[in-house]
Length: 216
Length: 324
Image (cartoon, rainbow over all chains, first blue to last red; front, side, top):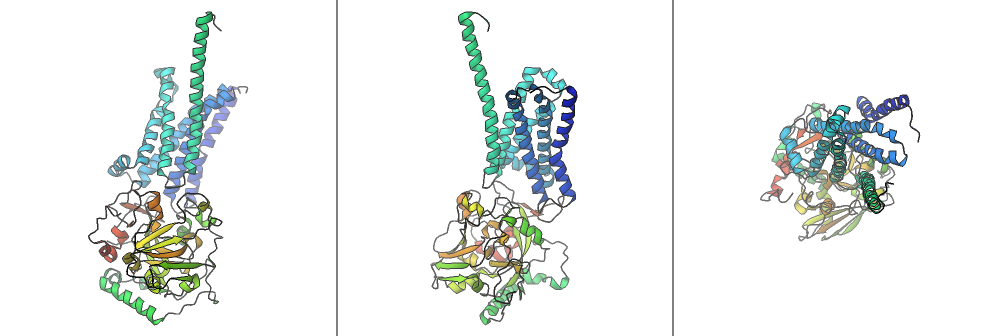
């Protein structure tokens, strides 16, 4: 796919930004129109939780997408998508801290220690926090590309913890959490496959080099 | 220990405190109900006039107020019928209402058997006339940490048990939900071990607070809440209240119960509301009252859901941390 011009990318970014605010706008609108059902806190919790996972998976989908479409420019949307995953994750966590626990710190610590799905959820958020903090160009420079990239692989673990959080909180009927799990598995398998492929290729190249001493 | 909330029920309808906390009144009430039963004093009109109370939304009449009702403000009909666990239809609490709309509650029979002198199969319309219908406004506490106040219409489970005349060796009552995968979409998949089964110890089943519900807000029980016949045991977590009952069996040994089969460490046979017995998923110390503002603080959960005065004696000497 041909790379769009700078202006088009910028316009697309604005559009994407507005689209990403959609789920929150729907919640706010419903909240003001008494449309959040019998248990609004439950609806807010579930909605923000699902969107967190969705944005994590979309973010993880960018790399395969750019390779498959040979469109390196799509990577320019990745930071925004990742930050929206963090944004919805933070709304999700805030709902828990405020509307579920009403800032009862001992009760929350008890939850984290005792309830494994809470442990997994808090882990997922904690793992994505440094990624949000180091998402600026300044931090990429400060850390250096290689180290920054290595740090940002934490998203694999954050998304995994997020899916486990969802699986563990469901009482019965695992279809929804397992759908997220299956998509995550495919996205991670893609990375594993491409990593193995690079490794094999570099070994093949190395072998070839040693035999012929000619650079391909 | 009862939660006191300002209520908008006219004072004429408020049950005097003495009526619901005093054990004596409690016993008197039970005797009165029994007398009414024995005398057959209450002939009921069944709404449509032809003796059938089939349709959802049909009015139930000649409902007696009960001294066992709480004076707390009932949860709205809309919330009660739109936020509900009914796994046979969906694992989502908002979906069963729509999915259960065409559920057929007629013809309907309940098979009563096991260790009884008089095994029988009763038609639902016969069951409806078994005992005077009472309004029982009960607190309802879900194991998931939310609660409602529900104006059930029903009759004591003991009235039906007496009809069956259980043998002395009957120590437990086992209930079973209808198995109808053509009508209950989730029964086509092994979400739970179908059909749903529940049970009570005999003394729990005979307790005057345990009822079989056939109505809600003076109307025929909506399908979503377990029509045509469901169990309500207000001092236990909501999932003990088995819905759409087709079988009642009297047995010697503790019967299996669905959620206990699913996750024995999470759900015990007794499942009494107990704020001091932590659940692996949810804190049971607090509950969110459905209908409260999003920012309203949660309510403290009470031992036996606030019915300790009436039911604590059933469990004297039992370690409730072990027998949860």
